[in-house]
Length: 314
Image 1 (cartoon, helix red, strand yellow):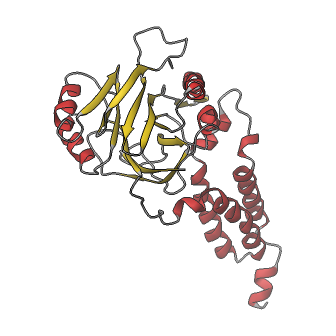
Image 2 (image 1 turned 90 degrees about the vertical axis):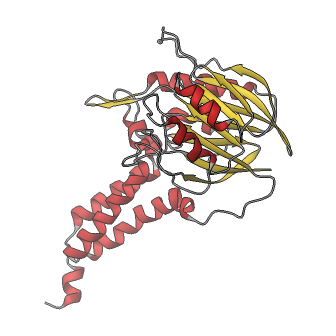
Image 3 (image 1 turned 90 degrees about the horizontal axis):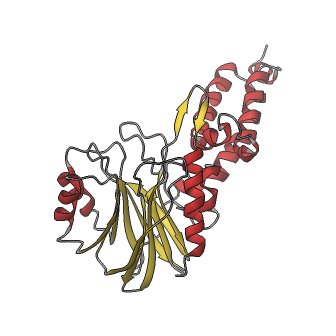
């Protein structure tokens, strides 16, 4: 039998079927039900990793010498490229009026808050948003960042450090009804930048849990809805949201935010867990502006990686 005949035999039907299913999951992930177990959100949390499935299928198709499987693989390749290919393109050229921001969940178990603060300052951002601020580490962050960031506001366990004056600071009511203990994890303030006023929202949404029963995200989803309502009421045109949102931008649980704000156009910037990042749950979003690129910064004493981004105004 000739080599061509070997390639054109009807082998690889199972691989082709898996390729088609992968393409369907990528293209219609929003159709996966999110009832018991939160399967839809669970899939969307790790959606880019379906690219690994495509690579594995490619290797198997070559081993099996299946033309059918290789042709079928064009479907998930096209779907993945459409969804995530743009994130891999080079970052746009920076502009002089870009707002440079850093977002970091510093972890309440961080044993090196001074080193963490110095590492973040080396990125030279205009704004630094931090979550899981607890005493006495809070005092260390404040002292270390003060020479470069003279303006700050802290509400509960979240805070913002700024090169520019801040005003109109207040807490955000994003606490889910099911949480009864003291819980303050959101703030709103106005940064008076050289290029105009920007409403800055900093938030730390409740954690999600992945277990045998699936994804438990009801508190996170409720908090995201409350934050979305606050953003809808925001009167300033220019808005930046910085926070550990405990969800990816593909996760439908963050729809109250991603339907109102622009997300990063470049960069995967997987931020959690720091040792082997699987997803970006630390986010930078903007209204009346473009988050042109997002990237991770070197690891600190936290279980999250910091992310940095440039926001260009329309």
